Length: 174
Ligand SMILES: [Zn+2]
Image (cartoon, rainbow, N blue to C red; front, side):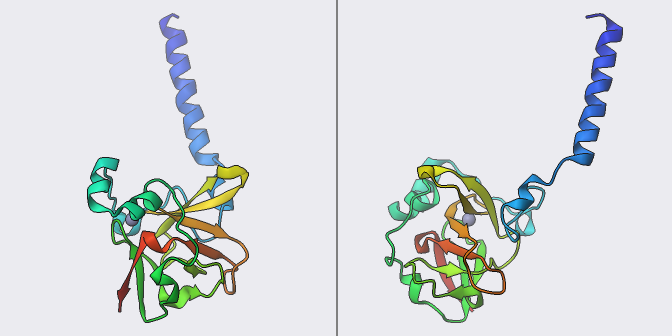
């Protein structure tokens, strides 16, 4: 490759990159209407990143299983199911506020259910193809901890059902 070819290639790459950034499709938008999109930052730009060994020291075994290994708690097992007091459900790992009690509803599933997160960027969504089902996984936007899934059979006003693991959250009274 001579110098001219090299310069031409570099110029072509830069132009391609600029065009891609300018016209890239909004791919993440289709996932759910309320969960965070790729270019949005978590609340306050806060991030908590730890190794699995570090998380193991902080979290109880059942919390580690759900939050870090994407496990699911047994339906009806969480004490958060029956809480309808004035307060906020926060991430059990990093304390990021996730859901307001006003968005909680009785889904009859045995898992704490909400129709929207406390802020659009409190959670983030990802496609989950595990067990042959295509579902949308919901994670804490600050620590990436697995919280549960979102479905489109929820009540008004959003029509969404955030099916959460109570193990992954804590309730903080207002
Ligand atoms: Zn978190």
